[in-house]
Image (cartoon, rainbow, N blue to C red; front, side, top):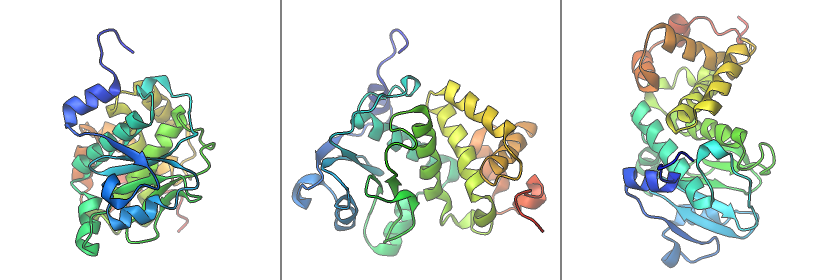
Length: 255
């Protein structure tokens, strides 16, 4: 931590102004602040844990999970992990001009936040009224590691592309690359420049036939070549455009 710099939680709370609520996963609806749909997802957790609630996300954290945290993240405990995810959600919503929580609330007549839970599912889970994110086995990537934060950034980004009206026609081909590009942007903007630098290098050195890193590098390279000021400017430029006509032919698609 830099001298004189407050911990991540203090910095985030000062900026966002939210409060934390944490309670056992088995707590009643009257006590834990979750709606019925959120209760149903939280109840799928494989082990007893804490339900940590933020304005846009919910993190169900196993009680026995005590990881070694990647230092650059400035995260030291599950509450700060939830803060990190909340901040990532807010960045993404601003960049993409889209709030998936509001989108699904209009459809379902119920607000269900994006829930992260260790329940046997992996990655972005499309099932149910509203997608959630399964925390894999907590070992691949290792919970709390540098790759863990990058992986979470990628999976969270899926929530913004899955039903984004401006990018509906490109998500099947470009979706994974868009999420790997967002991974870089989130790491960079959330005070993790070394992790972002390593990820950028990985994208540049990746196989152009890879729809994940190859697609992400095409997006990042275009942003830099056109001097676009970050992801908000890039998505605004690409709004409703044909990606192949603008960025070039995706090499992972064999015509």
